[in-house]
Amino acid sequence: MNKMLLTEAKLFLRDPGGPIFAVMLPLVLLIVLGQIPGFREAIPEMGGERTIDTQLPGMMVILAVVTMALTVLPATLVNYRESGVLRRMSTTPVNPIRLLVAQVVNNLVVAIVATVLLIGTGYLVLGSILPRSPLAFAGVFVLGTASMLSLGLLIAAVAPNAKVAPGIGSLLMFPLLFMAGMWIPRELMPDLVRRIGDFLPMAPFADALRDTWAGHAPQPLHLVVMVATVLVMGGLAARFFRWE
Amino acid sequence: MKVIEVSNLRKRYRDHLAVDDVSFTVEEGEIFGVLGPNGAGKTTTVECVAGLRVPDSGTVSVLGGLHRTELREQLGVQLQSSMLPEKLKVWEALDLYASFYRRPADRVRLMERVGLADKRDTPYGKLSGGQKQRLSIALALVGTPRVAILDELTTGLDPQARRDTWELIERIREDGVTILLVTHFMEEAERLCDRLALIDSGRVVAMDSPSGLIAMVGGRQTVRFRPSGPLDDSKLEALPEVTGVSRSGGQVAVTGTGNLLLAITTVLSAANVVPADLRVEQATLDDAFLSLTGKKISA
Image 1 (tube, rainbow over the protein chains, first blue to last red):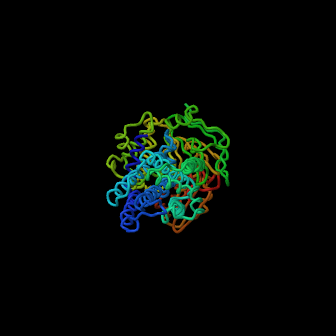
Image 2 (image 1 turned 120 degrees about the vertical axis):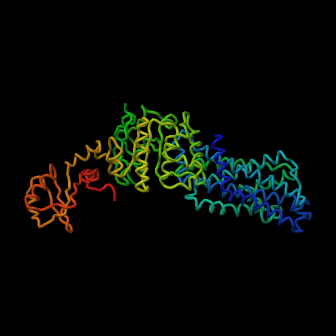
Image 3 (image 1 turned 45 degrees about the vertical axis):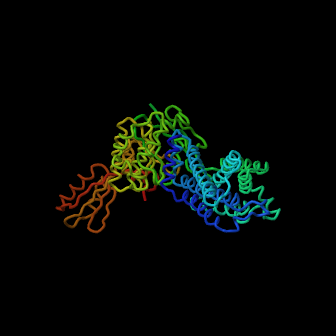
């Protein structure tokens, strides 16, 4: 397993386009958008919080995670299926599931690196706050990232070919990002829209991340939706995944 | 010892019957060929042997009935159109696949054996077609298997690369590995295989050594030459050995059996005709296949 992880990590770094995009785009957006004067003012509707405190960096963390989970991961796996890499491995004593695990680990590591960079940059450059409940924040991050990776695995399972896979990812990504508050903070959304978002895979992750970032407890509903996403999407992915 | 035993194998896909009824056994140390046209059911058959597909009915037994992990330890498989990640280097691929097996082969020796020692650090995407195939063979052998399945391994290779690959297969057999070879090249089957199963439309139409299969078509031969002067075809047609005479351009083609060449040259010298560009063509596996099924193997 170690050799598989090491090999996949090497291959990952030799083709760094996707991961670099997933890390750099949110980082640049964070710095540029952080210069907007209105983002540095306390907003009464957000409980007196400034946009640069948790809304902006929180959304950038979500953007980094979902870029990896919904486009980079499915593209790699579908390519592995299409080119017969998974098929060849299934002729050896090793279960090709290990290759999936190695890929998920790679994506998780990139998501963690992006998040650490975003938190540090926000704090040092913009004066954003650091997560006030670090342990709860880390727990929410892992759970939410797992839910997004499960969705990515499901895309890899159902996508017919490597050209379509990232397309399906993007198609899901934008409405879910909208519901998660990418363009309008969730606090400012109409009640009904926010309520719908509570039950979709991405918004609960965003809310729980921002809650723990600001030092509040995450809402139980959000944790339940994330766990359900992991179980349902992961289960469907396992059910429909094809090795060739 | 019987290394592979396949009996009454049958496999249907949603829309067509890929394998209807296939039975054969492979003895230890031999190169056994599965020969047939594209779509005959060759690949499905060996995929069932490799445990990658479950047959609808019939039985497959490899090395006395090994299953799953144990089977995969002992059986090396080189599949058609299975690629590797573009940026994976040759030695990394061998190292990774070696880590999957309990008794991995010596990677350095294996790279030398398949002629990739100087390509050690070349990424898969930069290898030529022949080099990719040789790496593929090396990966099938990296677990020191007792049996290797090689599926269409010279398709798409140039003649030189094909000959190099054949030499490699012969050396692997000398190491004591039993080989199940799938091919639609007659020349490959004639050159490498000890025994062959000819497969057509999911059925075994004949099984024998290459020379045995050719003998089944009755030792049919064709003699071609350019006569130096006028020649009456009826004199050739009158010979008991001759079954047919045809002309194209200045060339005469005489088909027949038995001691055909001697019979023809006797007639020619009596008529004071000298045959130029004289050639004798023996029947091939393709002729055998043609006479058994009415089809040609290769297009």
